Length: 223
Picture (spheres, rainbow, N blue to C red):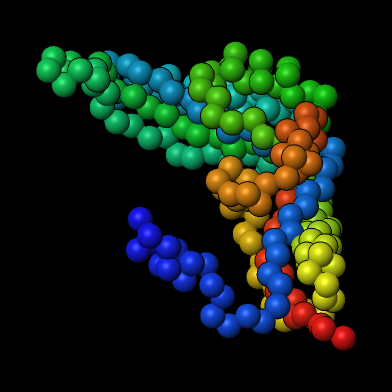
């Protein structure tokens, strides 16, 4: 056991001390102003012709339901009809179930008050699989910029606290490393970088939360 101590101490030593490195994270909340819906029409029939016919009819009905809700065709993306054989999932007694024909829809709408009825109507029209209902904001780039500014301020403040406790002062910024916003969840879930305020903001209902993170390297001044 004693032979391991030098190795552990050596792993924690800083070979080239140069300053303070801190991680800053921040979130900005905003009320959503649009919704994105992803859904599918899926039909299973005994012949390819029947499958195509049933799926085509459902696609037309879903399109019309979207128009009835004031959603223009330009706000709707639809895949082509896709046909494949469908089999039971039991490998020891695999049975042919029929031909499955499907089409995917991606819909964007700014009428948030109509979301509930819209979902009811497109499902009733034939969209029998809802993949996602996501609320978002159009000004996400501006919110991301604000979150990044706050993340830098948070990292700098943390560095100042460490420096004050060590009896030194924070000098100039030597390094900035952007942390991909898509990885924020990983940082919060698997590291000590998470803060209670950050997690609470991300769980706030009725809001879109835009996050940013940064690694900041600052020099140390002994003056």
